[in-house]
Length: 459
Image (tube, rainbow, N blue to C red; front, side, top):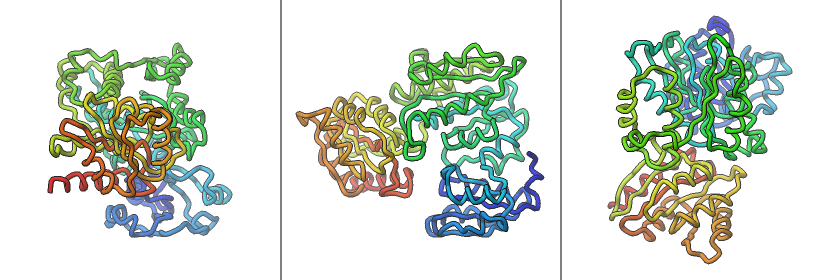
């Protein structure tokens, strides 16, 4: 595919969304010379932020519900599908029947990007690992023999989408991307994945979309299945040695011609580096080990890596300290939308912990989460649709009710309940183990409301 493929064509962006993907696709299509229509089930009020970013682009908007004519034989030539749209969407079925060219932002990017790509996926820790990998690779800029002159960070991480910037990416650059299971399903259609691929871990997630854990794992495995295995220039596949699924994958792929397989573990990080790393917890040490495994493929001096490790800072909403009020430290870990990620957050601290959890139900099991709360927390305040399920899981693990459990109807009420329970020296941790859609627009909105409530405690 060449950029000229889009020139003069009509392009439908299916799903504008609020996380930058639809905006990036629309800006790309406009710059490529296409006539662009943006369609979304949501209305203009919900999408105001995204629409504002397209104010300088000549687009047509079809909001508040999809229209059959946009996907039929008389509709646009090309449909760029947001990853959040399920493959079995009936409007996509109509588009396929009409012979439309159906693609996605990530497929187009992989077809057009001239630079090598490091791709990182997993259930938990992938955003931190992706940002940390890019940060460490930047430590190699200007070093003889490193082979790249600029590092781009993007993919399913914040709003760092790169398709609309593909014109500026050169062959002597390096791209580091976070890739979701949805994006990897899209890339499987064109049998493309990164030259260097890494998976952080695998635990049940997005079962409302994938149906089973096995199907979710299969989507993630696409990152390795379609790597360009070249005996003269091998691809690199990196697995978590401590994860039961990915360690089996290591055995499956190791020894293949044209592929170098590596493993990482939190135990691999030298103490000298671990002491300089500002992020807390075993999970973050594992993230550091993963990023270091990528950088070992490049001749970056150890002292450059050590300085970069020391200067890395946590991404927003990932065990981010918000405030200390009356000796109680409040942390925002709103990005923790699965039980394993919330468990990792609980295990990151030694002091008494109060966890604020709950939210939208993705049909994930809470048995292990309940057991972790029973083992590591002194109290849990629960919100959202999953609150009763989590409370029951805690009770099953803690029948003697050692852990204080309360339910709250809103975030302000939950924060107030946490404040009443907490004592000086405690940690209050917003680590929901669930998505946010039942009460908030997204995890960032949830974090903003939490932070506002915490800061109000100072008044």
